Amino acid sequence: MTRRVALVVLSLHLLLTGALASQTTWPTKDWPSVPPEAVGLDSKVLAAFDAEIAAGQYGLIDSFLVIRRGQVAFERVYRRDYDTIYGDDAKKPGGLNATDPTGPFNYFNPWWHPYYRRGDLHTMQSVTKTITSVIIGVAVTRKEFPDLDTPVLKFFDESQVKNVDDRKRRMTIRHLLTMTAGQDWREDLPFDDPKNTTAVMEGSFDWLQVAIDHPMVAEPGTVFNYNSGATVILAHIFRKATGVDIEEYAHRHLFTPLGIERFYWKRTAMGLIDAEGGLYLRPRDLARIAYLFLKNGQWDGRTLIDPAWVKASVTPAVTVSATAKYGYKWWLHPYGEGGTRLAWAGSGFGGQRPLIFPEHDLIVIYTGWDVQRPGMPLGVAMDRVLQALR
Image (cartoon, rainbow, N blue to C red):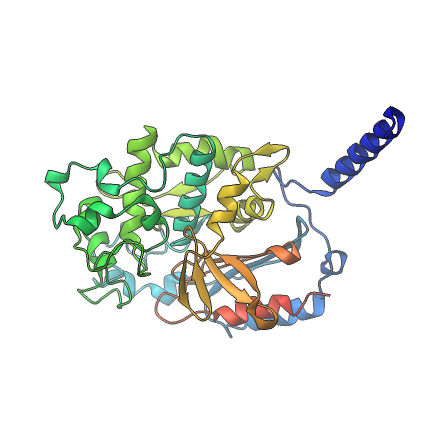
């Protein structure tokens, strides 16, 4: 190849790269909005689904947001009278109101749930776990977080931890991320059941001690068992390893670069950030975090998260069921013909559900507050939007 030809090839490459870069919309300030048809979606299909949601067919949905190719194509907010819906329950002690009835862990109190102080910041519940993993990914990228195979007990005074055995000594950060810690944790029970470990933890003064003290029942890394205490332990490890509170770190290195200016994050009585369920965001800001992953950790010319971390996060580490696998606190749901594709998702108590369909450059965000009954089925949440693709 002559020097002249090489220069022409290089110029064409640079022009193509620039053209592709210019096609990417970065919603750091705000999301642009377009009609559904402008991004290959059928407005009639979405409008029919919207009407069903508004009528209460799928329970207490608070918002529905569809973003494709970096643009808002459909957005609805559904107003619910939670003072009336949950007013009586807010006054009665129970599994979802175990401590101060006016406090942030009374899940029926409309000052705290589902919106923070009745504003527009919506509780994320266990989607907070997924975002905690994203923040850890930022710290890994910045080389400020330890190797994932580091034993958990390295970050504790072992003499102050109960039920220590060889299995607990083999528990690593990776096991906490993949919900394979091996602890005897019961979160599959109703919150008013005294055997529900998470309800016991949230009703205690020292969540971290409850979480790390819990006995082992399996070899770490062998069995999936949903465990909110594992993410509480991760918040402690983050602070010990980086020397920075995870909330402050997120503000500096994730939220600010993405343009997320307002959020609220609950803390435990001991002051530790509630990394298992305490974050409040606007749906459009949650979508920014989803878009960061959709764009492989890149944001407007910057690498916020190493693409290798993104890939590892959404690669199945363990199979949960026929319809769900699990990565680094990301739920992964097979879809499409033969289930050959995976939707990346978070899942939060009450109906918080970000969904990413990478092959379609599509993000769907739901928020809701169905805390006493099942909310929208996963199949409906996925399929009704996928049916709108054209």
